[in-house]
Length: 155
Image (cartoon, rainbow, N blue to C red):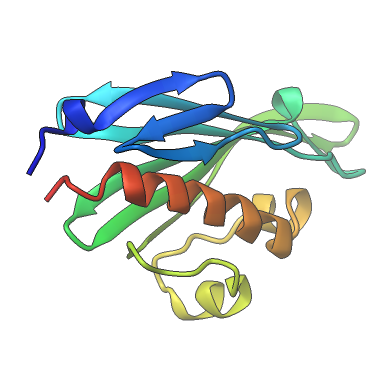
């Protein structure tokens, strides 16, 4: 098995090259940051542009998705943000977070059943107000697609 550093080639503009496979990361309103870690390479941040609602707004209109490998067959996916809620005409700032631990081969396009079946998911206002389930699924799907390949040899 090649060392992970040998398999990782480069991030060139909108393309990640890994083990001679290229992943286009240029998508409207998305940015991806990849970093090296002692455990290997993992997707560090996945920035999602979202629209605020009448009652809630997200700081800088950005959310952060962190993907980490918890064992050979599981990834931990967390969506985190700083949110502002208006109560009595005052802005109250707080942290929102949802998280799920899932198999590396899971398909988040079927978001509804995943959210119903997985007891580890913490429900909060990000899912309800900021990102439609379909949109969230699409972002996570791309996130996992890249992360799973980057981590395929870390076992």
